[in-house]
Every structure is written in C-alpha cells, then in structure tokens.
Length: 270
Ligand code: ADP
Image (tube, rainbow, N blue to C red):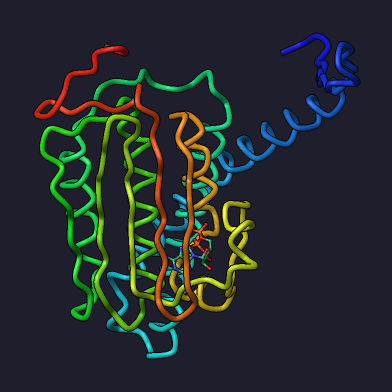
C-alpha cells in the first residue's frame, strides 16, 4: 500500500492530439486509507465493551419482574439501544470488509432460489399482517458471486421495503434475466422517496427522515452496503420511486455473472 498514486485522465484536444492530465493523489489515498483503518479499528474495539454490557443487561433482565416499573422500562430501553449499537457496529465492520478487497471470499455460482429462501426466512418475523411478500419464479437461475455479500445486499433491500411500508402492501421480490443481463428487484407500495433525495441514498448515514429511520432501527448504512456489494459484482443499482406510491430498487447484473440451468448454459466463469 506504499508508493505513489497517480490519477491519469486523457481528453481529445483536437482531431489528432490528446491532452493528458496526471495528478498525484498519494496524500488523498493515504488519508482515505487512514479513515478506513480508523473506522475498522474503532468498530472492532467497540465490540468487546458492548458484549460485556449486553451480558450484564441479560442478567438484569432475569430479575426484572422484582423491580419497579420505571426500572423495568429502563432495562428494556437499554436492551433496545444496545441491540441498535450492535447492528451499527456489525454494519460498519461489514462495510470496512467490503472496502478492503483483500479479505473477500471467492465468488461461486449461486442459485437465486437459495437466496430467495434465505431472505424469506429472514423476513417472516418482521412482516406485519398487512404485508404480502411475493417471490418470483427463479428456477435454474444462477448468479456468480459471494453468497454472504449478496445475501446482505438483497436482504437489506427487502428489510427496507418492509420498514418503509408502515401501512402494509405487497412487496415483490423478482429475478428476471435475458441474454444480456440479470435483474434482481424489490418493489414496494410504501412511503416512496422524494426524487431529489434519490442520488444521495447510498451515502453512509444518509436518511430521508431521520426520526422514522431511527424508530425503525435502521443504521443508515444499508444502501451503502448494497452499493459496495454491487460494485464487487460489476452490478448497478437503479432506484425508481414515487412518494406515497412506493419504490423499486433494481440490481442489474452483467451477462457474464448470470446463467440459467434450465434455459441456457453460460460457463464463462466456472
Ligand atoms: P436505514 O438504515 O436508515 O434504512 P438505508 O441506507 O438502508 O438506511 O436507507 C437510507 C434511507 O433511504 C432510509 O433512511 C430511507 O429514508 C430511504 N429508503 C430506503 N429504502 C426505502 C424504501 N424501500 N422506501 C422508502 N424509503 C427508503
């Protein structure tokens, strides 16, 4: 990670000549690395004290019934907040891992239907009775990637669709593919998003409605995680939304990352 980092840009000057810009970005690169290391180390260091706090809270919880009501509420509150903090630390660590390419597991061919089953299992406990969760047919469809990373990205999109549909509605999880690309999408009939916020959604800690997001237990890192996972898979995120009518988050995978056992063979990557 030492050495000189140069950013090179070329533009066409006139018909035959090119202008080449070379910028020394070593200092920027070092600062960026320091930021990444700091976040990774700080998150890691926060884990141990939090585990101790959670352990004692669990013990306190066992004697809760003998305590006055105000203290019972206090214990519940502390448990909720320490769960939130744990989620935040886990998400920060995941984001750090995604940013440092060196710790990635190998990509393999994954069945979309396996990912769908795991997501359905994860989502069932957080669905409201007013929600309907529908999965499309994905028989034989495969994507080339990391199971854990794609599971995190896809489940973040499904959890968001549930969280931001407080009045219920249908949530459609779809896989579609043709000869040129594969498309994973999550469509909801929830709150929707004002178009001016869409370009900022994948920034770390960006939330449209901070009050609502902290109530729903979000960390503000979900879509940043999605963005990084898709980057690893040469895939692109597309967000379409209409306030009060719902949103669709689509992940477009390139042809070489997808295949279908049933319809076609594409063994370029195996
Ligand atoms: P959070 O943990 O706050 O959900 P995310 O990074 O997952 O963080 O999402 C960022 C913000 O994008 C959310 O706070 C929310 O305002 C908005 N958002 C994400 N998904 C949806 C959705 N399906 N419908 C409406 N708003 C959404």
